[in-house]
Image (cartoon, rainbow, N blue to C red):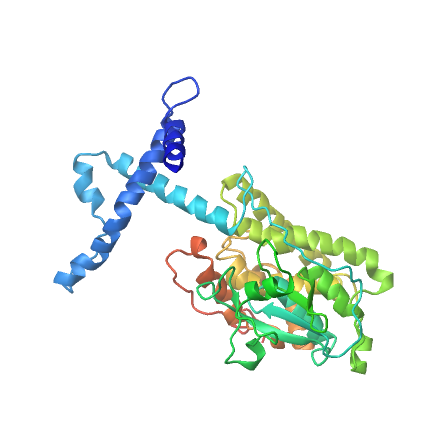
Length: 396
């Protein structure tokens, strides 16, 4: 039956419902065939010249010099582009689900128990976070800002999809703060242990109840709201309420546009597969940055005179923008930089960085480099740009 389905699929690519030739399907099929034909040749192309002559130049398949004598150059280029584009689109869909317009649609794999607040028991709860992830960064910010790191345990996940059985997050038993207290090897194993039969991506951040060995939530906005209500053994945390009652409406409204235009807007740029979808997302990012620039021209923080949950939403995106989101995701345009183009936003970042010791919540060099290392479809050559430091983006 597999062979039959395959033949029917090929027929559908070549023949329209009315029996006429499907030229688009033909070119698609030719593109795939050429790609599959040339792929094994890449091994010969890679090893062949250097095996006989260390000084030989690698000229790829040398198609334009040889095949163009019998096949028009335009057809060769069109076929090569078509094949590579087809493979790239399939890889992008695996990485980031798309709708028909080529727009990224963030999947929801939220798992949460019916908990509105945490029991104030020291050592009962544990969070799993990864340094590159902006959603995890929200959680790290709240833990640090409210001084509850001694009350809530934390494991730093290693971003290594080659070692992970599913997803990309693994544990490292050789490093104390990267070891899983429940003895699992990676995040998938932990999900299976705490929620047998779970289907979906094994995402971080993840908050668990060690006492009952259950997942509490893997949704960052829920986790930070719960952590904000946690009463710490440290009295200093009582001085910082990230969700004060008098600002709840303002915070909720701000969180909505910060998420839509910036948090998710940057990812919609990076994962778009059609021009229209990218253009719309890129305009959203520009609108979000311009809105921040205007607001921060006359007030200290994004919702007013005090640091709130909305600042926790905003800062992880801003701190990754110049090093990853603008150059790699093309968010707002590859030429845009906060330090150069949005002076009020940059001053705000620098103020928060120094006032709240944010360097303890992120390794910027590792975080931005991870995007280039792990998002293979966006950086297939695997070249890493010169690492960016806090000093490079004017924070220190």
